[in-house]
Image 1 (cartoon, rainbow, N blue to C red):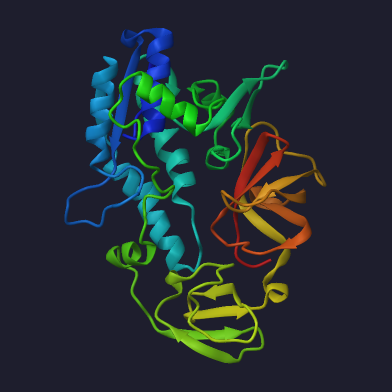
Image 2 (image 1 turned 180 degrees about the horizontal axis):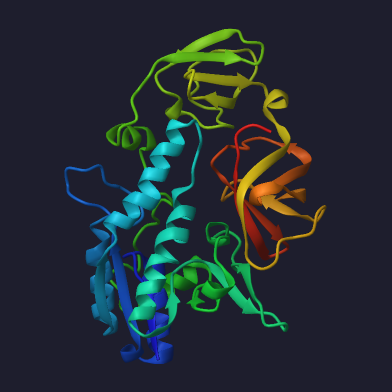
Length: 354
């Protein structure tokens, strides 16, 4: 049976391919890279961004070293419509979206999964640091990676039972050092390749402006409505941000909210900005939705500390989240991902307003 490996050109996905080729035989493994960007004239990722166009070459070289088949699929239209357009529109609304979550949901684990099945594959593997286990009742559980410093389960909370049945994460039990050792053992050219950024868009403000978001001057105000300064675009701020506000104050200030219509950035002290509850929309659950009042932990950003929370299902597939302690950085557009221990329960997109 054939296993398809999504190869980005980085050491992680290449090492995942190496482990599978060793386990299954090179003839049973096929590498696929996705072309996500268009022409050199269009704003593209650079530097330490993931999925940069030049990485396709590294992926091809890794596949050749392993002796596995390798293909490049053109996913530019899908990536633009499902990831870039959503990213730009969300920032223009004063939100802070997470394009990696969107890319996993709509490109890697839907679009690419469909194509892997068309090739007759029995599994799709990636270089994500996460784990999948089948419970005694037959359902599949999405779990954090063994190495908490590399865990990427946050980005995968949208996976369904049908998708989890089909995916494999060969690096879920490894550390980064062990992954590099696998790559060196198999003579891969990217064994020492440096880490990529988790988002494809490194210079976010420049990227947004290259895709049609205009700079617009506006006011920076405190919670009392007093004008503290000016800015040149709310898309250059995010809720919870402290540095780079461009205003002087006797106390540290954080971004509390963004009003894109009025081009206004609202700031306040830590106590004024921290929130103890929020609403999240479009909840997606790995298995069954939790019962009303269920307790869990929630992460409101990838590297965020898990926060004790209580959940309340709301109409339209939304979920209310009440935190045990107030938290900074509850940013509309970001993903709130719900855990119980190491297990991912699901996630939703943080809403604006109550």
